Amino acid sequence: MLDVRRLRLLAEFAAQGTVAATAEALHLTGSAVSQQLAALEKEAGVPLLLKRGRRLELTAAGQRLIDHAHVVLGNLAAAESELAAMRRGERGSVRIAAFPTAARALLPRLWPDPGQAPAPDAPVIHVFEQEPHAAEAALGRHQVDIAVTHTYSLVPRPLPPGCEQRALFEEPVLLVLHPADAARHGLAAGAPAELKDFADAPWLLPGPETACHEMTQRACGAAGFVPQPVAVANDFTVLTALISRRAGVALIPRLALPSPSPELSVHMLTTPVHRSVQAVYHTGTGRRPDICGTLDMLASAADSQVPAPTGRP
Image 1 (cartoon, rainbow, N blue to C red):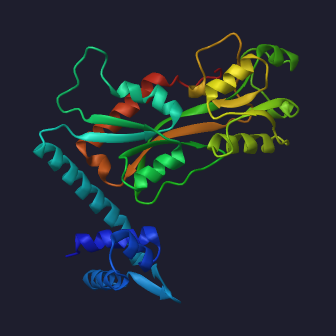
Image 2: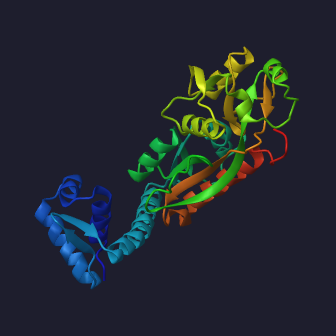
Image 3: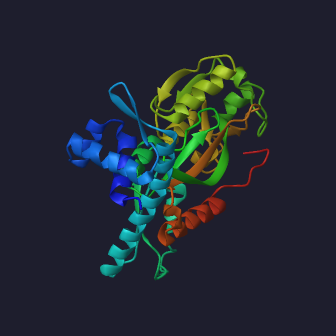
């Protein structure tokens, strides 16, 4: 039978990449790590590691065992968490990291309506606002249980190792500008926009560290130009406030828009760009009752919050 502690060590080795880094992370000696990996290989009955020069690399069998280890360790962590909560007489707790738009639009719906008591078995929810890369890093460190992240159609984001995801919704990215600027470009209300027509426009961009910045750069690049920013801000409400003053134009996901305003003209793109939003969690933990229930609530919140796709924003 495979030793769970050695599986955990193998998973740490896969994450760290070297015996020395694994030993430091687990507060062991390098020789102890090597001995435990050799013992695990003997238990498995097949080579798990291959020596290349002075480095050890996972074999195909080793990588396959890692995939199973993530499931086993995730289920074990879930069991330990639930048993600990039962010993304390508490409800389970679920920690969620989400990017700002999702944190504003979806996460408040995980709480019952004011004046309504939570269900007896409902988990305690802890929320952390984090951009997708930071949320995934926190998930990898087991600091959160669910990371609500997004992926743009022009900026794919690979699923982190040892994780699963549940799709929540897909939304269009829209061109947003002042109505007077739309009229100057001959763009009727609700009509689809050609990005190339705005090559000379002043652009309002999110910060360069965000996926939305990269998405805007790629969308404009595909249209044949490089956007010239007059303002950079990560808060979409800042960008829309600047648009209302005719400071420039921006590409903004539908859910990030404020309530309809006469100062904003919103348009689909003739070459569509979409943002997909998903909940990411460690493989196997989706079967935990508290995490499964939270994922169901997130999906329900997404269904109630996100408008059905139409030809108009």
